[in-house]
Image (cartoon, rainbow, N blue to C red; front, side):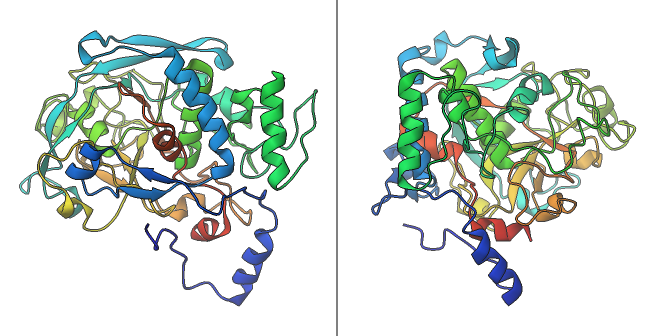
Length: 423
């Protein structure tokens, strides 16, 4: 077990420490068991990557939601092998049956990271390693507002962590502590409108909504942005709950494999940065604003905006020296985050230089992205100052175990020690 799973800033003084002791009272009480179950990675995963074989599962009071979704995904099933995988459009009921296209990506091996002689390369992009990824589907575009708005504007009273405070018209759930979990489970069993989709933790309203106020465009074909890593992960859970397919953020390796699309150059179209305008919205052609998805050329595998527009969350945290620990032949590498910051964002954006759009380039999240959020603690749902950050999703061919699924969706959560990182 990793005894250093929580890193608490050592620099805040007695005043802030007192505040956070008080804030601990605000959080809905988690029903953690005395013996917390542990995520055990599959043997081939453990033996081929430095990702910890054991990782304490967070948010165990929410495991019943994950289990319900896992049951639905197992029942629905999918292709038995890579050869049966095809591109498809997912219909999203809670988004007025909006459709989202996913592209089938065959598993394979590629060189992860950038070579020492690549122009504008940064040290954290290497050393290069030849790694393997299993088959998956990936979104053809970044998640657009058409899909994200119904999640973001869910219209249900919630606690600050996104859990239900009450069921809007039918059964008020105000029970706290150990009885709270049972009340939610009872609502599921009754088949109330408070079904598994609503029970998934979802955003609370912004302190100041820049989109509803019209300060920023949020037309349905623009990519969702200002999302936190936690919000993007919970969107994946919300989408999985209503479709029966398991969705999550891509690992950094999956993302870079899909972006490169078989290439080894700085960009998926080659090394000539003069061609970037044909494929990407970046800091020199965006006119200081993000743009609708899929308005530039796609990469060789038919994926749009892998360079530019909004930068994209991946599952991985950033740890100095992690790349050195990777070995050639590693399968499905994933650097499981153990803190809220820093985490990896890929692809560059409309607000960044061209070199930051390279396939291997990495941006690290920082708490400055919440600078204008006046709340204490700050929201776990919005990065008020990250109008350049969005995401796309993947669906692995192999449906994971319920424990793996839970970890993929819950690498961040509302609790005082993590909230302290936002100061």
